[in-house]
Every structure is written in structure tokens, then in C-alpha cells.
Amino acid sequence: MTTPDLDFSNAPAARAASAPGFDHAVRTAGRVLVGVLFLWAGIDKVLGWQGALREVEAGGLPAPVVMLALTILLQVAGGAAIVAGRLLRPSCWVLAGFTVLATVLYHGFWHAAGAARHAELIPFMEHVCIVGGLLVVSTLEPRRR
Image (cartoon, rainbow, N blue to C red; front, side):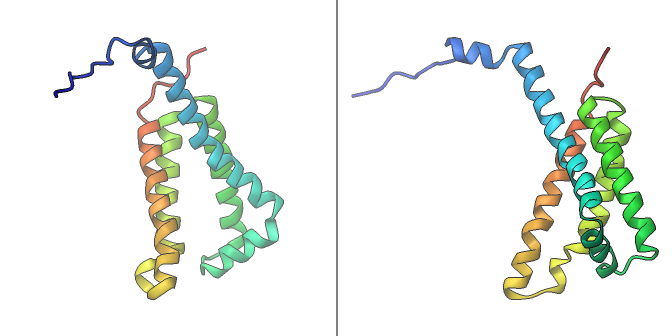
């Protein structure tokens, strides 16, 4: 017994999923989610200043208070710009560079072994994916008025 090929390309759900309005909604949702990640990270650092400062100090960065303040500014301003759909390319590229730098500085899985290596490899790869998302969002058209 043979089964005929199934072609769902003309089904109503398939047509709706390929509609320009659907694509726009998906792109908008993806852009907002990427922006919220950074916006919230910056706000969280403000709310938990002392803990965030200890984290910066543990990384051995110079002028930790200044570095933390710059990180917060970058994350809040960049995240808000992405959420608003404004200055997408520069915001995404700067945040991608920041994320690469922070990932290398704080998630050096290559310095660890065993379970500790795996514990650093997971956030390292998550950050790689975030950079990928930022690069994709950087190609979107800025929001029009």
C-alpha cells in the first residue's frame, strides 16, 4: 500500500503563516525579545548594584564603578533602542561586541575542567546565540513613524 504525498502548502494555516503580516509580527516579537533581554539586564544591575559591582570586580576589570555604570548605560540604552525599533544596526552591533567581550572575560570554559567546564560552556554558547540574534536583528528595517 502506498501513501500519496501530502501537500499542505495550500492549507489555510500554511497560507497565514507565510503572509507578510505574520512575518512582520514574528520579526517584531523577535526584535522586542532581544531588546528586552538587555533592557532588563541593565535595570537588574541598577536594582542590584552591590552584587553587580562585586561581579565586575571579580572579573578584574579596571575602574569597576565606571565599568558597571557604562555597562548599565549600554544595556539600558541599547535594549530600549532595539525594543523601540530605532538605531537597530548600531545598537545591535555595539551590544554584540559587548556580549562577545563579556562572554570571553566571564565564561572562559577553556580554563576549567570537568563539571566546571560544562557549567561555563553552557552560558558561553547561550551568549553566542544572543550575538547571533543581535546580528539578525541588526538587518531588520528600523521602525517607521
